[in-house]
Image (cartoon, rainbow, N blue to C red; front, side, top):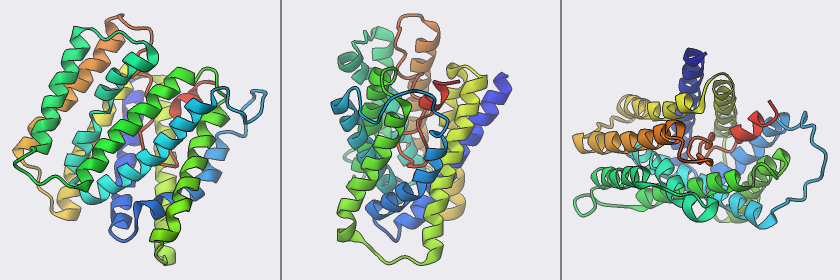
Length: 311
């Protein structure tokens, strides 16, 4: 079962990496606003498939409207930041920054979930920040909007994951899954007139592929978490650095320098330590990182934990 969970997890994150390659292709032509608008639109039928069998009684009125609104806004902004970052930064550098999401979740869990973070996890966060400094190299390398977008994605993805952990047991999954998608569609639609570029059918098809890849990746993760422990599946996200190096080299001629590899290694190690600490130390009832089962941006990628809740 563990091997099956690992393979499904690896497949899911490989699909997410392929998803990002298509985003990067389109990002060289269109604004992230336009890409997100159409991928959200094309994702509605796919995500609806996950909801037609929802047996829970109720309506679409959120139990916690302000938390749902904040999470929906965070997911919309996180998607825009993530799409812009993978379109403008070398993939290995973008992913290295994205890998700090578990570290920020650990910090946000203190005020939002009332989590007590001990010296071990606090130390892991500080070590991870050292890795970020090594990757970004402030002062010795030019920092641009792509870096700002990557850090924006980390903030928004962490926030939406923590909020989902806080209210997820009380909200219907149709609320948790459709409201963020609808918010993304509405927010991006509001700004579409400012950036719209006419699209040939092949590019519209590419946006459909983004939606399909995100949905398929999420299905793989549902399978992985169904047959395996979160502590086994969660570290599979770091396999994306391999795909980043592969795609970056063969598609874009990007070479990964030693500092990026060292920094990424430090960030990954600190993230793994947080996962292991939550899984085996027995010091927390919340385990916010282990319960973060969806990636922070991909409109077609429904929230995995909501799909698992009825299983």
